[in-house]
Image (cartoon, rainbow, N blue to C red; front, side, top):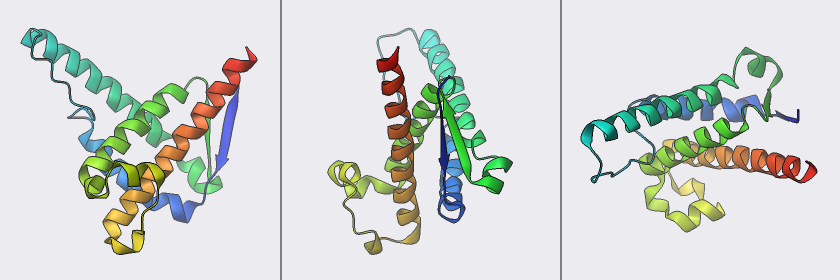
Length: 153
C-alpha cells in the first residue's frame, strides 16, 4: 500500500488546526454544500441529509485525527490509500466553510490563484486564507498520489 508522509512546520500548521476545528464543529450540523432537494419526499430527504452529515463529520474527524500527539512531537502526517478519499472530502468541506465564513469578499479567482495581498486583511482572515491554501495543498498531494497509483496498476 502506498503511503505519503509529509513533514510540516508545527508553528505554521498549529494555528490552522484551530480554524479547522472551529469550522469542523459546524460541519456536524450543516452540510458544507447544502442540498436543495425540493422534489423529494421530506422524510427521505431528511434521512439522506442525516446520512451525509454523519459521513461528513466522520471525514472531518479523520482529518483532525491526523494531527494527533505524534504530529505534535514529530511534525509528520501520513496519507494512504485507506484514508485518502475521506481526507480529500474533509478538506473540501472545510475549504467550502472557510470560503463561506471568511473569504467571500476575495472572489473565486483570487482564491484559486492564491494571488492575495494578505497584509490587507485582519488576522482571522489571514489565518483562514492560509488554512484554505494548506487544505488545497493536502488535496493536491493526495490526488497526485492517487493518480500515480492508478497509473501503476
